[in-house]
Length: 275
Image 1 (cartoon, one colour):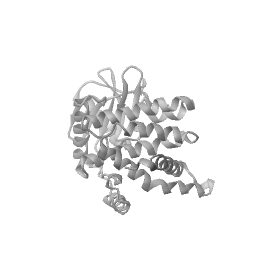
Image 2 (tube, one colour):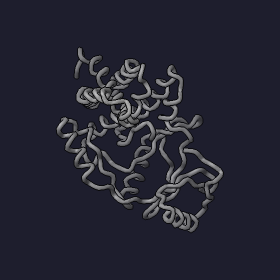
Image 3 (cartoon, one colour):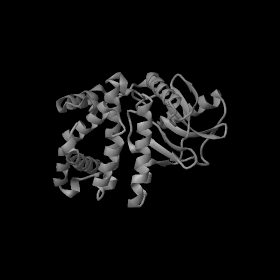
Image 4 (cartoon, helix red, strand yellow):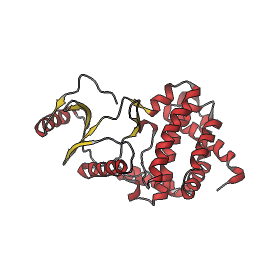
C-alpha cells in the first residue's frame, strides 16, 4: 500500500469526520491519509454482503466434506469494523505484525499503513529462483499465528504486506472464521487461500512448491496438517480446467486451475504417508 504526497493530512476527530464526508460523496469506503504525519488508512463501514452467496459456498463445502473450505460471511456496518479491530488486537497481542489502530469510532477505523508491496506482487515479479523465498515468508507468518492459537481467515497473498524495515504484516480481518468453525478448521482454512493465490506463480516449479508446503505442514498441529492434505486431495480435480479453451481461461480460472495442479502434486507426494 503506497504512501503518496496526495494523502490529506488529518490531525483530529473533526478533520477525520470532514474527510469521511468527502469519502461518502465519492462512494469510497477506504482511503489513504496522513495521520499526524504518518501514512494511514481510513476505513468506513460497508453493508453486509448478501447471505445467499455464502450459503451456496457453505453447501459446496459440505458436499466436499470440507467445513474448512466454507466462506465466512463478513459482518457489515459497525459490527464488521468491531470484528476487524478485535482480530487486529488479538494478532498484535500474539506478536504478529498488523496495522496499528490509531483511532476508531462508530462507523470507521483509522489504522497505520504497513508498507508498499504486497506479497503477491513480490512473488509475481521475482525471478523464478527467488519466488520461494518470498512464499516462505507468508508460510512463516501463518505458522507463527497458529503457534500462538490465532488464525487469519483471509490469508490470500494480496493480504500480506512487506516492508524491508519491519518485515511481513497482514491486513483484512473483516470476518471471523472462529464464529463459524472450530479453531483447527479455521487454521486449516488459512492454508487454502494462501496456496490458491500463489500456485499460479510456480507454473513450472509446482513440485518445489509442494515440497515447501509439506515442510511447512510438518510444523503444524496434526489436525491442521490432516485437514490441509484432505482438502488438497479433494480439490485436485480442479486441474481439469486446463481443458477449457484458452480464450476462456481468465486469471481467476487460471488461478483455480493451477491450484488444482498443485493439489494433485501434493496429493501424489503424500500418497505413501497419507494422513
